[in-house]
Image (cartoon, rainbow, N blue to C red; front, side, top):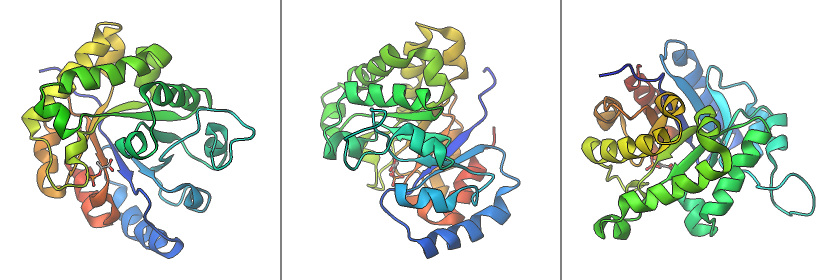
Amino acid sequence: MTAKRRALVAANWKMNGSLSANADWAAAFVPKAADLRCDVVVCAPFVYLCTLGRSLAPAELGAQDVSERTAGAFTGDVSGEMLADVGCRWVIVGHSERRQLHGESDAVVAAKAARALQAGLRPIVCVGETLEQREAGRTDAVVSAQLAAVLDAIGPEGLSRGALAYEPVWAIGTGRNATPAQAQDVHGALRAQVARQDPSAAAGLRILYGGSVKPANAVELFSQQDIDGGLIGGASLSPADFLAICAAARI
Ligand code: PEP
């Protein structure tokens, strides 16, 4: 077994939080975060990014979305440059909630990943199949097409500056995680797809698992050879649970 990559655990707070709840989260998280042996990112709603600043260090700051455009008449959108300006280092692109609720296509997700890199942000690119697609035996085809669009736009090296997140849609927020073996199968296939273009970038690429990760299942998931950490939704709202998940990602 080859050495794994340094783990990365990212919190996706989604549309949750408030000034006072975020301050409480930071007060509970930061004093206990110094000993973590993984990289940590917190992806907060846009409106709180400025206030959060570096208050979550050693965790880095991330956003949950970015515009595929640079500037101008795009009401409601937020550019990568703006995110970098307020201290973001990371941004999630292609989350299934963006794909499903906002109609983001593979092409739009790929354009967002490219814009993120151009703005100096590291994209966390999400891919994942629905339950219907899994049951139809189409998991590999679906995630492979989602990944291919991003590879066309930013290449393996660009992707490895950020991270890839495998998030089966049926596991997000449902309490039903993929089994470690199911997740490893997909992670292995995704890494192999990147390796066909660039073996070295593939070897360094961090592939996160997301979908109902909890303290109770994190160790087993993160011990899989091609699982390099997690993208954590619901459980990240509790600093204690999030710290326990980060502690499970030791390599
Ligand atoms: C997510 O929002 O990316 C996610 C994985 O959510 P949860 O951990 O709640 O399933």
